[in-house]
Length: 193
Picture 1 (tube, helix red, strand yellow):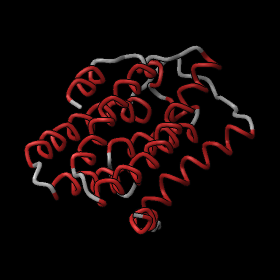
Picture 2 (tube, helix red, strand yellow):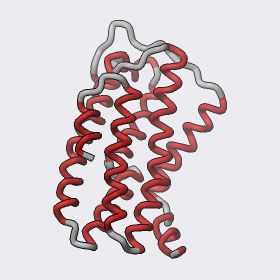
Picture 3 (cartoon, helix red, strand yellow):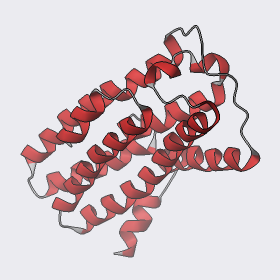
Picture 4 (cartoon, one colour):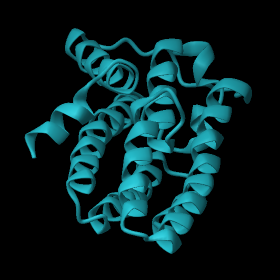
């Protein structure tokens, strides 16, 4: 977690940024694994399901932008909201879920992982994970701030997605929000054990 977060903090390339962020996310999965209980196993499966939706949403937007414009730097995303509001919201919700901000599913996933780790008394590891959540919140919000609040003289032009890309984004955002707000997925996975 610490190494992934430290490298993500200094990344200016969006793809590398998400790659190092993924390393930090694996650390949270390991917290759930240390729980060595049914709750820990359930939390890991639930978090991986959420992580798939969140990461596919974020990587999807970045990949579309990169493929169509060749822009991959954080500075390129300044003012992104003015030209591409839908893609900006998709990326923002995905990043919020990765950061663990309520009411996205990522919040509940991390909460269940930390509770599973706490169930076995891993308080030092829980403290390290909580501090890393604060660090990750900083670098995720840095991207959101650039997209919504910072001006860019040469913003990324309007991007038109294909139908399949839009369906994929809708599935990702639906998965993030529905799993976070109105889902019994955690209880269902728990009942399978």
